[in-house]
Image (cartoon, rainbow, N blue to C red; front, side, top):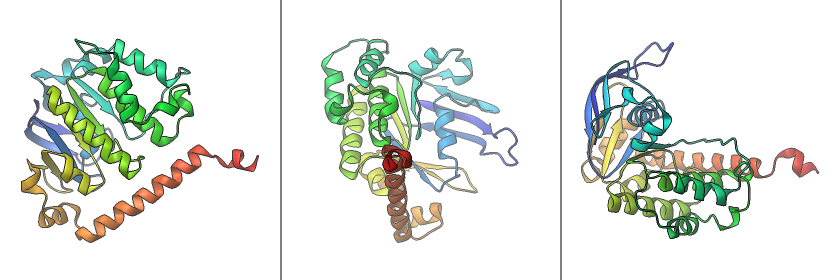
Length: 266
């Protein structure tokens, strides 16, 4: 369980607190964080994963106060974090990194076939001999998700984990991840722009608002037009259009990443 106990947090130099005296406990299962940009989703995940420390109150992961973590290894045992944009300073190929993460992670029983399984699930076969710095945005994101599962942390925090994936890849990835964490008893909290995917793969929703505390409940209870339109302050049809535009922008950025202008001119 991850528990927020009277938590307040303001970014340095910020005029308004992101959270003020927030208390809630995340239930077991898969939790999707929904709400407008700048409503606090990413900050909440960073606090829940121990990457940020509250100004007031306590965040506890399985009973341990995140302020007590003094090393990255100690923190990572309790919670792994997948950021929307991650960079790695290494010249190692993907295959070696996958094996290294698994061998040095927190799984008590190791099965070498698990690495091969994730390579297939996340379509990494063509990436294995390439350096991590040479991957496209979508390839990198799939590799990062695989790393997080291979590491064996007690909880997973994922901030837009499938944003650069194709639609079929998103469903395959979320389907595998959600089934895996339920089977292993791992906590999973993530944010997504795609509302339909949140409804399909989450057990609970954490709805974020601009001017009030977040609301926690089952997906069946909270995934309604009225609740979503109130949180996003926009008609549901407009939200789906925004999702499509967001996807188009990401595809364009990924194309630029794969084929920079200087390479195309050559």
